[in-house]
Length: 92
Image (cartoon, rainbow, N blue to C red; front, side):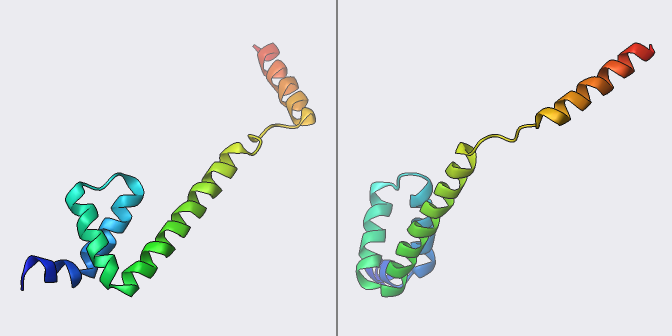
């Protein structure tokens, strides 16, 4: 089996490259190998699309959760906590 056939028939390597591409830039060789594989494999092409959508959704979800207001204490709780601290300090 020549190198070209190995690229076309190696879905495991293709999925690894698809996931690696989500994290960092592929080398020139890896990018070419992935493009060749995706040109001939409809299952990996679908996996690539799904992986991209999932990754985008996770990043958006994480970004949205970081943008929402940070957890805050309500004023009543703060006041009660301050009073308890002062009581403890006055005991000594």
